[in-house]
Amino acid sequence: MSLKGNIAANYIAQAYVAAAGIVLVPLYLGYMGVEAYGLVGFFTMMNAWFTLLDAGLTPTLSRETARYRGGALDAATLRALVRALEWVFVAVALVAMLFFVLGADTIARGWLNVRALSLEEVSRAIMLMGLIIPLRWMSGLYRGAVNGFERQVWLAGFNVAVATARFVGIIAVFHLVGTTTTIFFTYQLGVAVFEIAGLAFMTHRLLPRAVVPGLAAGWMALRSILGFSLTVAFTGAVWVLITQTDKLVLSRVLSLADYGYFSLAAVVAGGVMVIGAPVAQAVLPRMAKLSAEGEHEAVIVLYRRATQIVCLLALPAAAMLAAFSEDVLRVWTGDATAAREAAPVLRLYAAGNGILTVAALAYYLQYARGDLRLHLIGNALMLFFYVPCLVFSAVRWGAVGAGAAWLCAIGAYFLFWVPLVHRRLEPGLHGSWILRDVLPVASVSVVAAIWAATMVSVPATRLAAVMTIIVFGLLVFALAAMASSTVRAAAVRRLESHRQAREVV
Image (cartoon, rainbow, N blue to C red; front, side):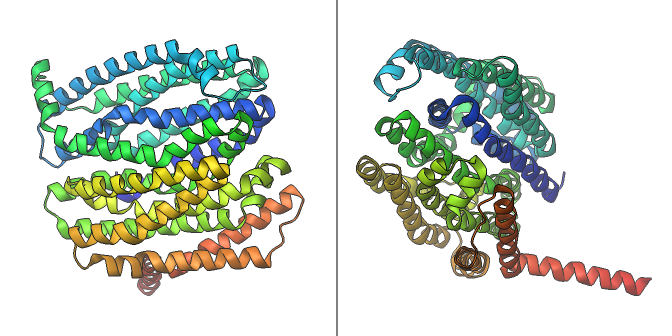
């Protein structure tokens, strides 16, 4: 499949998954109530924290699979590596399940600020979370292998099927069975089993046929990649601490109902980060393959093209969410109180996530070269300064304080660390990258969104408000597209091809 096809498939699937997860949240609120939705937000946060146990093995397997396709790894070694990783993941998952089941009551009574729900119901929900989360985590291993084979069209379709079951199917369950948290998480457990079964089947179907050596050979293959894997693991662990500590702290500081409002803002703002994920999913294995083949110039060209694509898709969305935060929440939830409570938090997190989506692009070059030392150091420095500020701000000012700390930290990382990474890896790149690939789209997006917010009064009626936000969002996107040199060049090529076709006729 071509790179464009993979990116298109990833975006279609990611858009569907994000839309399903975001659009249906108001229905969850209506069926379950805000405190129960706070429990769902806690479940989402725990999913993210559980990735700490990945130890960098999932992205490493994706990279090794891409290296096999580039001729840098033989089939027997790849199969041995997959088998060794499966043993590791199964063992960790079983221990984690036992921990959750035994500690459910302690978490329900000692950590969460439960008011309306019964502690017994919350404890049962946490036990079910403890079964679901390890299964989803193991699915990531197989998803990484499929991604490394660049079978992303199939993966996109499968993700759509899983998202449909996870987000849409539960509505039918609410209608037919009930709306308790126990029913919700029991159903999600069934979806998690289906997901891991499908991904494991596809992974073993794609693996090359080869005589698999003994388990000792698998451990040797695993040991050979531990340097890169542990670097990925450390940076991944640091990144989880950076992106999830606010949610952990707020789950203790806020009531479960207020945490539900915060979770609303986090879900919408998270959509900005989701926008960049399909590009990374398609580009990272291709960059690793090109790097293994020694195609340095092609790596840089692809990196800059990916930068403009991510900026064009993420920055207008982030700017519109920040400018129209309360209107977006009101239209989305139909709840004026929820919109008013969550809007200041959404404004801060949308802006921060927009900057993060661009700042994260520097990781692409480091990943392709297999050298993540700068990524490790940068994340560690950010963690050192950010977490104390976050804890202080969250305890003192709640969710708004956490959002302000997040925006300031990500802004500092983008302004001071990303230029250093570019200078070390590719001297002379940063100036043209920021001036030609980032700044034109970013500046147009921000100015256009601010102009729209000052000039437009969003109607009170829901349908009219939706149409107004969509129209001005498309206008901001169109203006940003005109500022992108990649889009302009593509438009010129398209016009030239049409002109030549007319001349031939």
